[in-house]
Structure formats: structure tokens, C-alpha cells
Length: 424
Image (cartoon, rainbow, N blue to C red; front, side, top):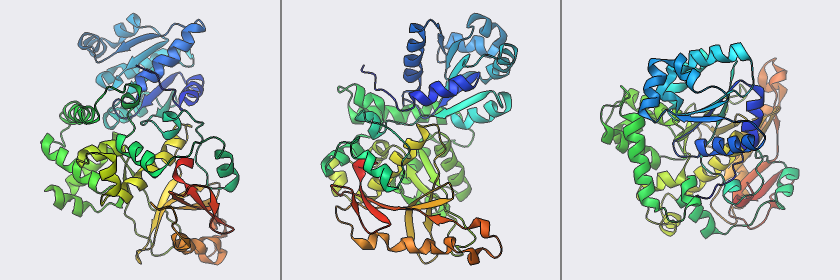
């Protein structure tokens, strides 16, 4: 199977050089093990032999759980331990090992069941572990083009024109429909529907079955489907609960499982004392549009592009590309959204370095100037008088973007740009 070079490779190497333990986490089958094995091969060429061991092996897992000290005598660092969530008993012993040797990069570990893993890691390895989150393939990885955290300023956008290849509507929806799983791109013989059916079955049986919160796998599958139908919408727990036939607290708990396992992302509303009428509901995005398309039984890219959810899928695709561009660089995505009680919305806000940059996402080749009309609701954040004595909270409004199906990068006005979706 062809190896697809990952944008996070440099980030993983950098984090490994900073911490004794590297944890690479993310959903199932996004290529965590493949990435680390590729980097271990590079190390081997430089004279560093890193042992690989997987806790998927029942015998190895039994040893790790029953006698962690003996396990680490058998598999001495530098070592790559796959699926660490199956034997978190190892974590205190890893801590003792790294405290004794103080060597950077001794342990590389992977984990899929983040909802079970992260609490144990934070308790056992605080200050000793660097964490990298890996999601499915980004466009930059699929087309092997440079990957950088997305910015809205014109200098960044102009520089991207020479790095990215123009895509047409059909190309973009073929990509949205296919999704982000590496195996679908590395092996052309893999059937899309069969792959995602197996993926969902594995997720339900191995990650969900043994959670106390989920007694009925099929009911949880139905809930996942309902959540997919709500991609790019604000979360109303009562609405999700009613559709799934469960209680609102259960819907909230199950949604947190989907967040923790990186199936979806919840985007918080931007909060500022100058904006008095904002709603507090998070916004939901499915992170793999291919999985969402499978759950909702879309049969091909053309049907999806013409269908009622075409715009919602386009929004989630654009969001996930921007989101992954930050994660692959080892950065926390500084993303929010805006919605107020007057139903004025801004699809995405990037807030960093005291600058708030609005982004509207439109599945249109010519959205028109009305696409930026809601950007002016942010104006109060630029006025010191809005903060009642806390002038330091004043925020600058940066360059705005309308990410759309335009063929070229063009100015809307002196402050905002039409940005082709393939440029992000």
C-alpha cells in the first residue's frame, strides 16, 4: 500500500525531541501507526533502533496489564507502543522509566479511545508527554501540496496561489464524498461503502460496546446518523434527543463520546462583553464528510452535490480543512463562530494575536457582497467604550474571507476577499 506523506511528520518529530513521551492520538484508521512506523524507519537509517509492539495482540496485552514492569524489561526504549488504551497500567511504569533516564523521545505511544485514555495520561505523565492529534487526510496531504495553518490575510492567500492546484465543483464534491481515510487513497481497490460499513462496525463494537453510557449499539448508530444530519448546525440537545428517542442528558453524553473520539468537533461561540446578544450553543461539524455521507446513505458525489445537504457538507468540509491545518502544525485551532438572537450568523471566526478574522462559507461561484453583510455585527469589539473600563479587551477586526466556489482569489472590497475553496 502506498504511503501518503503526512503534514504532521515535522510536528511529531519536533514534539518527540521535546518530551520523553510522544502520544499520537486520533480516530481509528487515520494512519497513526503508519506515520510513526515511517518515522521509526527514518530513525533506523540514522542508527536508532526503535522496537514496535502492539497491544492489539492478546498475549502482549496480557503481559502489559498483569506485569507492566516485566513488559518494559522485554520491550526496552526507544519503543513504539500501539493502542496504549488497552493497557493504561503501563503509564505509571513509563513515568518511572523516563524519570530515571530523562531521554527525549524514548516512548512513542498511540491511542484511539481518547475518552478513556486522556485522563490516565494527564494523571500519570503530566509534564512528560507531548500530544499530537492526527485526523484524516487533508487536501494538502491528498494532493501532496504544502500545508500551513490557514490565515485570512491577503499576503498569505496570495502566496498560496503558487502552492495549490485549482479544483472544479465536481472535483471538490468527489473529495467531500470520498472522505479523509488514508486507505481509500492509498489503495484504489478498496470499496468506499464496504470500507465505511466496516469502520462503523469496528467503532461500535470495539470503542462503544464496553462504555457504561451505551447499552444499545443500534440506538447509538441511529444517534450517529442523526448527528450527521445536523452537521454544520448549532447543537440543540433536546432536538437531537427527540429525534433519537433518548433523553437530553444522554444525548449530551453520547455527543461528548463522538467529540472525544474525534468523529465530530463542537465549535464554541465567540464570546466578548461587547457582544450582548450572542447565543451560547456550540456548532457541530462532522470531521470526515465521507463517514457522514455513508451514514446518511448518499450514493455518489453527484447526488450529494445536488441534494438538500450539499451546502452543509461543503461547510463541514471547509471547516475540517482549516481545523486540520492547525492540528497538523501542532497548534490548537483558534476557531469560533458567531450567532446572535437576531439569527445573524458568521460561519467561522479565527481569533489570534488580538485579531478577529470573520469567514463566511458559501457554495456559490459568485456569492455577492451580501455574503459579508453580517461581518459588521463585530464592530462593537473595536470600540473601547463597549468594554466599560476594560479597554484592554478591545479587539481588532482582521481581513475577512468568503470561502466559495470562485475560480480565483478576488477582493470583495478593501477588507475582504473571495477565496476559492481549493486555496485553503
